Image (tube, rainbow, N blue to C red; front, side, top):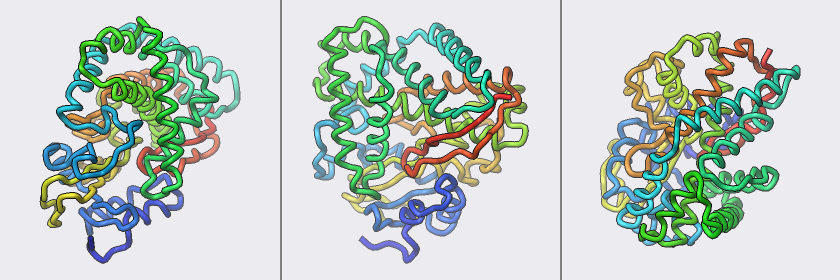
Length: 388
């Protein structure tokens, strides 16, 4: 495969210093090479909104299940995230029904109480690490409440979860692949104990009751519960981290948020600071995108972060605009593989950010946030902040 004679876009992303601001590079790629080939990961890279959306809307031509182009997929990776119809249909329907059955009113009350308690304790200190002492523990507490599973030891879970996130960039750093596959299998073993115990509460209770008649293979069910736990923690938790940093970096960001419509504000934060930056598809049938011919068998990488800042779709895309409407961002994907946990992530973020904006309007950064090197799922490892 040969592409246009430009610097490798993924190598440029991997080498960015500081690593947390890829948007100038995204803009250059959208303007000069919106569909370009990366030798670093052996994939086409898409940065325009129109092209990214076209791929998401065409699952017949662009597969999430890489076995459709002859790739071998290890069993720990077979889940709702990596399957296409017809296998995807059963597990998707089961989990969509389970998510719809959540008591969102009760969940909102529980999260509000938890957020209030944690912030009150942290407000007694001059400063604290917002990520490790607030966002990550809160995200874990929220997703375990939703699942209805036993408490999870954060000292075990946090590094295991990070190994899975690191493995999402295995095309760039191959050494992360095997630890990530092993971590997924370890986490799926834990979800298996939940079903064996026949938990009666939360999403797991719903799935346990429906599993026998769902027609979903047990390994797929366990892997999908693992995916719900991991994505529910990482995507939602990283949104809390990156969104908070974006709000504090915005002049009067908290004051603007406090007087904005929460629904519009949360969607804009997701567009502006979405942690999910990229996803992959396999081209099954030859297609043309952005003037380039994508051959059957070619991998395609959708750059959500670039699409969400495309000026052809969003006016003033680099401005955090809490009145933006419409806001058809791709922060949660689109189509059959869109994020199941979207309402949960939005609920949690709304409660956290509006609580801080209203009750702690003087919140500020004490030490600039430190971003992880991850490209697929952006995140902050530490952010010293103060609530006063």
